[in-house]
Length: 148
Image 1 (cartoon, rainbow, N blue to C red):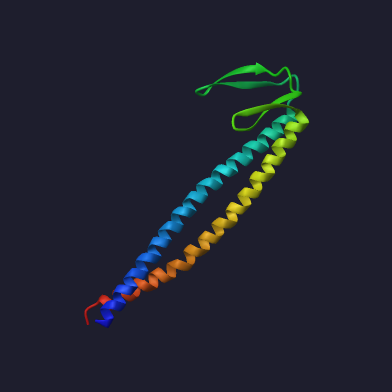
Image 2 (spheres, one colour):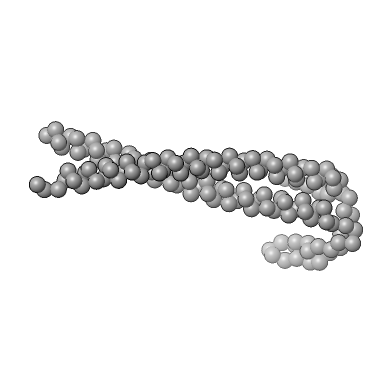
C-alpha cells in the first residue's frame, strides 16, 4: 500500500515537472521568435540610418505602391524626412533629427534584445535543470513498476 502511494506521488511529480518543462520550452520558442523579429527590426533601422546618411538630392529610389509593386522615382527633398513615431502618427523632421530619433529607437531595441537574450538564457537554464529530474523520476518509476 505504502509503495503504491509513493509510486502515485512520483507519477504526480513527474507529470508536474513534465508540464513545467513543456511550458518553459514553449516560452523559449516564443522568445526565440521574438528575438528574431527584434533582430530584423534592428537591422532594418540600421539600414535606414545608413540610407539617411547617404541620400542626396540626386538620389533615386524604388517607391512602393503596394502588393510588392514598385516604381522608380527621384528624391527631390532630402532635408525633410517623414518619420513614424507610433500609433499611425508621422512627423516631419530634418535629416539630423530623424537620424537621432532612429538612433534612439535602435538603442532601445538593442537594450530590449539584450534583456530578451538574458531571459532566454534563464529559461534555458531552468529547462536544463528540470530535464535530469524528469529523467530520474521516469527511471525510478520504470524500475518500481517492473515485476520482481
